[in-house]
Amino acid sequence: MKKKAENYIINGKEFSLFMPQTEIIQIVSNLAERINYDYKDKSPTCILIMKGSVFFGADLMRLLTIDCRLESIRSSSYGNRMESSGKVNIQISDLNIKDKDILIVEDIVDSGRTLKALLVQLNALLPKSIQTVSFLSKPDKRKVNVDVKYIGKEIIPVFVIGYGLDYDEQGRHLPNLYAYV
Ligand code: PRP
Image (cartoon, rainbow, N blue to C red; front, side, top):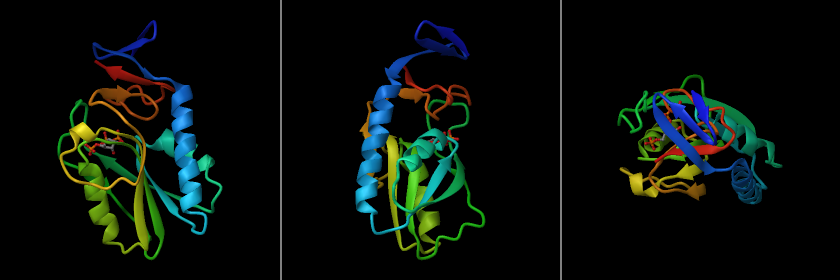
């Protein structure tokens, strides 16, 4: 990964600044405020969908003032491409969520296929309730209908990296978002 001014070049593709860290912090803070209010009488289990939600999930949970628990699930669909492969591989093991209030924590909902597959598998484990919080959403890219209760920001259908999102496993650590345009 090469840095060129405020741009990054990964595998020959140039990404330019899309959202600064200051805006990211504000979005996460707004989401936490809504969740703290809605769940004030509950103790939700936050399930971070790895790897993309690692930074968002960590930042969000540190702003939660409610009693909450942390779980994680590995899910992958992209490979090293910029488009979803359409096949979702979800690894759920030893997850006991029966009768619990579940909050799925995603970095982005794009086609919606990952979230839809997650909802099918998690609902089969009989949680008391299940909702989703996603840092980003690309409504124009949706291929399946999914309900996302908490959306940080809807964005145009550009490929973004940073703050957990990657291109070919690179760029996840960047504190700002960068877009390939
Ligand atoms: C990304 C992202 C979501 C999913 C969204 O994960 O973290 O989980 O794709 O895309 P969709 O709505 O089209 O299904 P990815 O499969 O790339 O794995 P990663 O989190 O390890 O990067």
